[in-house]
Amino acid sequence: MLVEIMAAAGPDSDPDAVGGPEPESCDIFHPARAPEGLRVMVEDGRLTRVSLSNPTEVKTDRGFGPGDTAAAIKAAYGEDVAASPHEYEAAPAEYLTVWTTGAGDEPYIRSPEARGIRYEIDQSGTVATIHAGGPSIQYVEGCL
Image 1: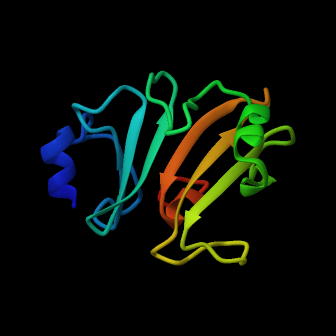
Image 2 (image 1 turned 45 degrees about the vertical axis):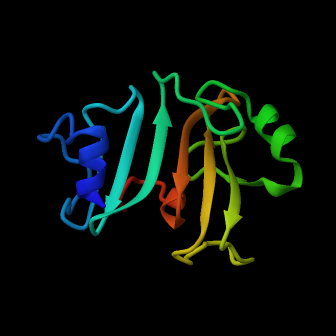
């Protein structure tokens, strides 16, 4: 899968930057030809997460991007969105997660078939970062 990412979007735009403590098993990077603000996470050679942060003009399938409000996310997804406390910031910072496939009722989803999107909401009540992909969207410290 890493080969396909590089063929489609280019190699790591900053190969000297550390994207993870063990890049052979997990790495996060901005492909050279990808839109600004887009990063990919590759675990064991497989794409597991795509992330968006400012500055970017890329939007989700629902038209959301960094800077949109938590209220707009909650209104759009309704009861499909699960809110959880932010790991490092006080409310109103939070995580808003929507699983589209493969998720169960457990608090931490581990199924490799699970797919979803997580909006990281900052202290201002707006989207700071968006993660889409599998269970790795739940990671709060990059590859850790």
